[in-house]
Image 1 (cartoon, rainbow, N blue to C red):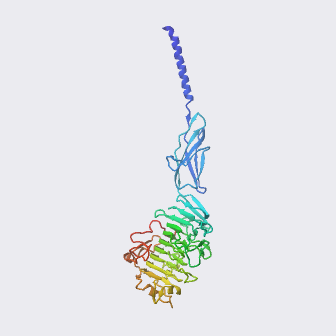
Image 2 (cartoon, one colour; image 1 turned 120 degrees about the vertical axis):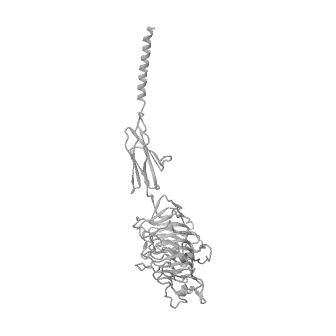
Image 3 (tube, rainbow, N blue to C red; image 1 turned 90 degrees about the horizontal axis):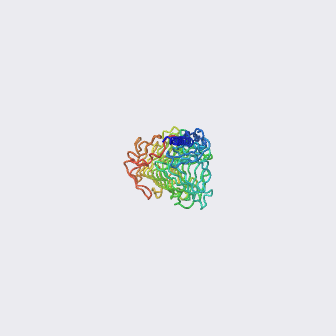
Length: 538
């Protein structure tokens, strides 16, 4: 037994040595994990770049960076290996929202393990990326609500030859999109004949055409406006050229369609392109009845709010606030329809509520202007210290019109004025009014005078016209409340009230119109201007 000990001792010693050796080998093969980086972020608004940076980790060969729009990084927008400790991300096309970045350090040898991911750094983009548009759009384009669009100079939707039958270009604008006119560049948006605009906003997400100046510094004339040219007929010739180089319009297709504008605001426009040549907020030039125009506001335009140059365009739910000249204007043979129109002058500027012409050069030119307008509210600013608030409805130069169910209030000269012999003669035949020019079921209140008295030698007087018992107009005492809050330019309420809310107007004489049971433009129980419009001087 004693002779076996040496052998056992040798075996035990060997096991001990082997165990030590194994332990040494285990220590040598266990690499060290690198420390996780710490990520920081810096945004340069001028260059629209975000720089993600992190601290250097000793023994790291490079770094893996991920950027995502969600903090779970399930679908990263950036996933790449970066040499160095920063990455500059060009965000010119990135939408508003919150973005996250994380990184890990990657080892440079088998002696080290990759780090854990860093905690995510967060960056909020509060302003949308801006895309500049200039020149002529020659193929279909969609403007999306995750970006803002800067109009630099005149932007034309359609080919440079607007009569080209191949001009089928459509500009589509998503709800909630903002289009900005660049000041100092004669910025404007012009839809050429044959082109289309599909601008369909919503009450919650209107489409806004506005100034590039900051809030508080915006003003009328900051940029041009919106112009639509169509193929409908005029009385000035087969075609005409738009003011301010806005293109050719007119033709023979009175049912022409130039697209849709719905829930759109046009703000602080009306730039003077040349002396005495200012643009309207919305100019409808030879536009046909196939065009949809609904829920449109023109706010603080330098010249007219909305003007119809010939054509047969129809428009519902139109609001013009604070236009520097006329709120609504028509000329050159406009034969369209309008319903639910509001005009409010402010205390700074303004001329007529309606300025209604046939043709200034030839008062009897055909086709004669002959629109039908129902349910309107025209609000002047009689106390304007600049004496710019003139006439509620100026009907002149041979126009015809059927005008029903309106409110005309607070104009400094008169509620209504008829000018030029051709206008009087057009409205009268066989010793009676012939229906070519009528104003019915309309309330006049708070005007300096109900009607003008400059009708010497005409077939009838303006008093006989407006007080004709067959027309059924109302003449209320000063201060009669027929609109909820008409004179407040900062917080108006245009809903009909009092006699306007409690009296039914004329029934629609022709299709397309809605049959309602109130006078004026805004239902006492349903304010269609709420939520998507703007008020005030800026």
